[in-house]
Every structure is written in C-alpha cells, then in structure tokens.
Image (cartoon, rainbow, N blue to C red; front, top):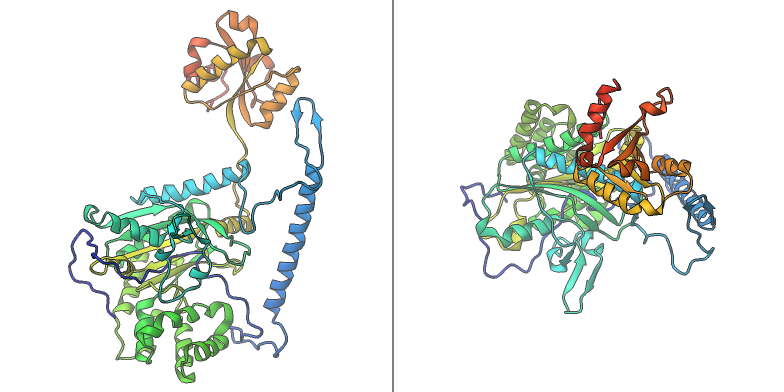
Length: 554
C-alpha cells in the first residue's frame, strides 16, 4: 500500500476507540542473531561444507565460545580468590568475604554492574549520545521502564513478544520491563496529540530489557540511544538521522574505514514482493526470513521461504536474487516495468543528499537489509563493522503506520534509529581507542589531626562554593605519606592541609601534586587566605603565572 502523502494537520488526533492491534518495536538489539545453520552455502560463492560437517566459520564460533567460557570461569575464580583475601595496609582497609557467601555476588545473567570505573565509561559514552542529540536540535525525553504488555503485542508475532520480562502486577494489569522505546514514544506523542506541533525531534537513552541469548555485544539489559523524527514525510528526515550517527562516530574517533551504514527500502522490497505474488499478509513474516540472509546464506534463506512461508521455488529464488543486488540501479532493473519506482527514486535521492551533506562515503546500498520488525514502511538502515567481527551496531528506518495502530486517525510520518551501548564499546576495544578515564578530583582537603576536622570541613565547603571538586579526608592519617597516598589514589591535583598554625593566621596551605620532582617543594605550595577559597581557581592561576609555571587548570 502506498503511504498517504497528502497535506496533513500539524497536530495529531486520536480515535475514540483504539484498535486492539498493538504495534511493533524498534531499532538496534531487536531480533537476536539466528543460530548458524549446519551447512549454509557461503555468500561469496565458495563451496559449502559437506552435509553433517561444520563450516570453518561455525568451527571458529565454537572455538570463540569455548574460549569465552574459559575466560569467564577464570575471571570468576580470580574474583572468588580476591574476596577471600582479608587485609589491612596502614589505614587502607579492604573487605574480606567468606569462601561461600550466602548470596550470589554476581549480577543476574545478561546484566551488568557498573562500578565507578565502568560508570565513568558509561557517562563518557552517554554524554556523546546526548551531545549529538543536542547539536542536531533534538530534545531529550524519558519514560518509566515499566510498560503495559499490550503496547508490544502485534499480529506479526515477532520474537520480541517472547523475549519480554513480563508479569501481572498486584492490580491484575499485564506489564513488562520495556524491551525497546519506540512504542513508548508513540504512546507519549499520542497522549499529548493536540498540544504537540509537528515535526518533533526527540532523543532518549533508555534502559531496555529482553530475555535472549547473550553474546559479545548483546546483553539482556542494555541502554539504547534513540533519535526519532515525527511528522516529516520526506527523505530529508532519514538523511538527518544518518548524519547524526556519522557525527557520533566521528566524535569518538571512528571513521568510514571502520564502520559503514547499509541502506535499503522496505517500500521497494514491498513493491517487488507484490509483483511476485506475495500478499500483504505474507509481507511482514517474509521480511523476517529475508532479514536472516546475512546469517544463514542464500540457500538456507530460499529453503526457509519455501518451508515456512509457502512460497514456490521460483519466487523464493527471485527474492534471494533481489537480496544479492549491489546497487539501486541493479534492483530497479530487476523490478521491471510494472513495479512502483517511488521507493527507488527515494533511495537515489538519499544517496545524493548524503553526498551533499558530506558523509556519502559512509553509505552502502545493501538489498539484504530489510529489518525484521513488521512496522517499517520505507527506508531502513544498519550500521556494520567493516572488519566483520561484530553484529549490527545500530539500525532503524521509517515507520509511518505505527501511530495508526495506537489510535492516530491517519498515518503519521515517522522515522528513527536505535543505537545500543554494548556493541559500540566492543568496537572501541577492537580499534584500541577505548578512552582512559581515571578517577580525578581537584582537591583533597586533609586535617592535621582530629581536632582540626571541623576546620577542614569548613575549608571544603568554601572551596566547593567556587565550583571545584573536593574530596574531604574523613579520618586524618597518622603519617603525611599516607595522606599523599590517598590523594594519589583518588587522582587529586591539589592537596589542602588544614593545620593549626596556618589556620590561626586565617590561611590554609595548598600543594600542587602534579609538578615534577625537579621543582623544589617550596615552589609547589602556597598559603591561601580563607576569604579567597571560594575563588581559589583565580588565586592558583595567578600564582602559577607568578612562578612562571604556565596556566593552571582546576
């Protein structure tokens, strides 16, 4: 069916009685990777392994899985051994744990703990997500992680409905932990339909939950950067989303030599399938099979199209031939004269605009990209690792019919993408550009003794008023060396000593811990008046200039 492109109102209208058919779900981390078939024919045309024997790729995957399990077992054993070590070194105390604790100390399968070092990486990554969203003029939104199950149940029957962490609450409502964000976005937009002026440009970084097989770059809980445009029916919206993805990659040090963006059109594939006799009812489940092409190969795809979708051998072969097209022109030629070419024209225009935008070298036409979800209606795309080591890094497309399933009077043009946090971290590891993010703090404030602790607290408060980060040493150390050890461990730039003699004079002593050993001790420290602590940054900058030590950044 052609998407309605007539002039539409700039606000949304909901029907009084919403359809009982709920809708689909979105982008990345969606359908789990299919298990490799016993003997798929390689896409490159090389000979397949004899029946009953495993291909080289399958053997490699099995070896990787065994190595991963062995590494995880070794890591767990090391953790257990570390927990059993009880120790006390100076005033630094570690925690001892019994050999068999009464509770499992590991997180639930497929989930992660974020210790401070992992949290610093998460914050760095999500800051980049949010920065790109803001630079592109999008607004951030969020919603509860708990949603009603009806939001995700649809007639197409994707695997997402089998992967939900679902239950019935104490009020008898069927609810689930959110498996992805797009249906929530649709619910929120329709919830304020009359007050929201289109187009909308929104982004979010929600936590999502799916019970599926865990593997490298795939967890059962993950965070997913989403960007969506609601209310723009032209191809310009898809180009803007692709530009945002490219900007993010560039900002974290990834180039077009590392990552590509595969682009195709569900509209084109719909026209091709219709010309081959595939009905509208068959379209969505056929796309689910076609989406497995890269994983199971051409022969197995044809077999599954015949066995599960009831297509004849000739139609199944023609569909696979379409998936092997290497350019938009090749696909157009295969379509023939009787096929709607509007989707082909959209694809050509998208590539033209990408060149004009300056990221044409990131795009690759790939007819095998159809995305496994039922609601996509136009252009679809996926980010892929050119080295071939990782699964899809991001993905999305146009979904003009989604709002109608939830109560919009007419189709509302919409498109968006999802970008999982797990795979991109693996990519950064593979490229050797994972950022080094040590703990850092501007000042450590240390009291000379317990009697000066109140004065140290006052000092910390005054410095924080100036916007500096201050770690207050809660228990004065017996030795000065222990105080310095603590400051080094927390990554402090300056040490502030609160001692009786300086305090009586209305001052504290500040020492720069990052100056080299070639600088005399007396040149590394300065006494600062209490009245100046709220503007200590300016004081230290002036001091550095006076000592000709260059600019000091606090």
